[in-house]
Length: 99
Image 1 (cartoon, one colour):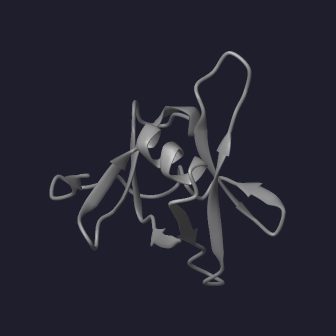
Image 2 (tube, rainbow, N blue to C red):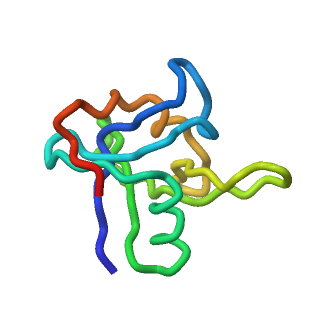
């Protein structure tokens, strides 16, 4: 299974929550992916996505959160704990190509 580091996100509106992340991506490698596509890739065990803690360099893998009445969304989980690292990432820049 391929693993990809996520270094940026696109939010539906600034300051919103995990449910409002529309795209994940990598500014260094200049790609981005719609969250629906990432959810499918994770569900079918084709790929995994992670963020890296800048202080410890630990990986926090993106997991799918499913809440009743809401579409699935992504959130980072490391050491059995959910964290807000995903929504704290910078915005994906205009050079990131949509996959």
